[in-house]
Amino acid sequence: MHRVLVPAAVLLGGVLAGCSNPPPAPPIPSSTTVPAGPTTTPAPKPPVWTVGASPLPLRPDGFGEVLPTPPELVNRALPTVDHLPPPAGDRYAASVAPLPTDVLARSTWQPSCPVTAGELRYLTMSFWGFDGHAHTGEMIVNARVADGVTNVFGNLFDARFPLEEMRVVTPAELAAAPTGDGNNTTAFVCRSAVGQRRWSAHAYGLAIDVNPFCNPYIRGDLVLPELASSYVDRVNARPGMIQPGDVVVHSFADIGWSWGGDWTTPVDFQHFSETGN
Image (cartoon, rainbow, N blue to C red):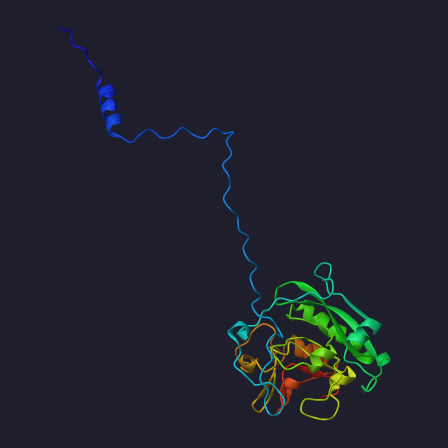
């Protein structure tokens, strides 16, 4: 009797094959198209904070309630919205011109203001935003200080001192209920001085408020803007804050302007003026 010798590998392979799972399905031919699953587009992220969206309850004196600074604004660094084309490159650019008709129409100027439209000038100036980008801002000032003001903001640009926005204030803003979260660097606003009946230096185009939220006005228990209480603490230095002896104070001093941060009461860290008030 002849024995047939079966190689162990063949025998073992047959045994294992009988005990294992079925062989995998053959691969899908390359010409076969597998339908893609449904795709979803991520929803755009909401803004960190919408400025001017929430009016504050009023105090008896007509100002808004002074409330704790929202967490989103404690270290304020909101991006700048471009109202004018940004500058080309990283070099400072500025222009001085008579007040255009369309700008005059959207400003707070009216015939009862203490200056004529002809005494004002329209400036455009480059500035660095908190977003790290260069932007173009606009400002209305008195004609006699126009060149000096452009020099000041040239210094701030060279030092990369950040500003959130720089635009002309409108009548609607002047009449709106307080929201306590504005941070617009601006000059001419035809209004009275805070809490007084006399014209503000802003009404002559002879005062500028720089990053008002980061540099609030303080009088007793009143803080303006009303949500800027976190920035009353001047030891906790953050971008956009004005400090004694810094580039902002020195640059305005060079053109003969004084700083409200040197006042005793009120203290107005945002405010620089040619008139001293």
